[in-house]
Image 1 (cartoon, rainbow, N blue to C red):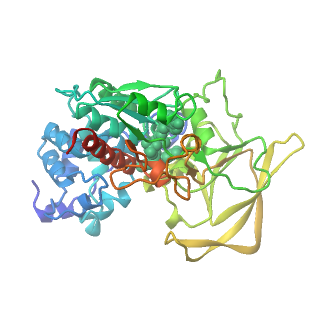
Image 2 (image 1 turned 90 degrees about the vertical axis):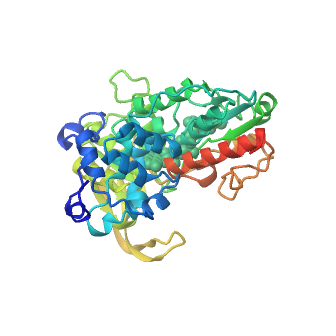
Length: 462
Ligand SMILES: Cc1cc2nc3c(=O)[nH]c(=O)nc-3n(C[C@H](O)[C@H](O)[C@H](O)COP(=O)(O)OP(=O)(O)OC[C@H]3O[C@@H](n4cnc5c(N)ncnc54)[C@H](O)[C@@H]3O)c2cc1C
């Protein structure tokens, strides 16, 4: 191992990525991952802190220092066991977690040089996780999971390991939730999600697709046939701008745009649900989160003439992962910061032609702690746009909660639960975006695991 002084002198190992000019033309994965040499070099930079702040900042408490120490020694299989003990979806989290705000943001090395590339190390190690097997003993208890996003998958995995008979019910025809219908292939290949689902199947988890709980079957129906239910239905209802012209042809919610691309393969020439041909035309994306970056970078790949992200705050407040922002810029996405749409305008055929925008400045911090955008009176401008994508957040879809009026629902339509994810209805638990509102993969996964522990206790005792 290098000495402390040598470690401090080492630079962070860069994640190899495909060149921007090449990747702008296809949907293949951008980040290529470390090889064994690179991962050992990067791990050997770690200062192996005795009281590591990175672990405190990991929402599921992965024993990062232990993991990195094993990687630095080339003991990848043991490192995989360490990560798998706390994170049931490491190949996914290694790719999409906002590490700069979690583990890497707290890294002590980051105070002196660049933080250790913990996400990239986790991604590498995930390939060494051994195949899964069904639990040795079964309990005879049946649990239904509603929704196959990270919350549902994590909950299902832990419950199957505990010997319960688990079935996941998914409304869509593909499994994985936002991991498949939202996050594009170039960030998270569908095969990675399919591998995780395959591991769950190997553990005995059953999956039923095209089942909308609250429509085809009710929550009470599930409680007749199952001993407990976990609700992980996410927050998939798009928010809109509420400005004139949002009805025009060529205005999409990011949800619809990304779902058509990811699930319905709208980029294929013979697609039955194509997106309008945007070849060479100007595209506007409203919003600054991961969804906005995914939409903008997808529009680049569809051959747009230009793609501009309009965001009402400044660069510092952009909520998307830093890596996605940098990748978007490399791929030619333009950022018009401190702007907010006032009106979408169209032609006689009802097709979008332009957007009128208001220039903003930053005022006092709001309840989120971020400085709030304030309009600069009279400072507006108009720009040509043929496709506009609204990516300003999602709310919980009220379908299931409306169909189960006895479930306690909070002010924003989210489910009210205790620390273990128990709702007010006996035997019914919930977690992920349906409880928190739109958040992150790892928070949803952590909630699914906490609920699994509570369900296990409810069914068989501690
Ligand atoms: C485009 C996009 C990009 C993102 N990028 C990132 C990122 O880079 N990093 C990150 O950490 N987070 C990211 N997020 C957020 C993250 O994906 C979510 O926080 C996370 O997926 C929430 O998990 P979940 O299991 O609660 O819900 P979801 O992933 O939304 O899964 C819920 C599932 O339930 C199903 N369902 C809904 N209603 C029913 C019903 N009535 N019956 C049966 N099934 C139902 C849905 O079809 C869906 O499959 C992104 C989100 C989006 C939209």
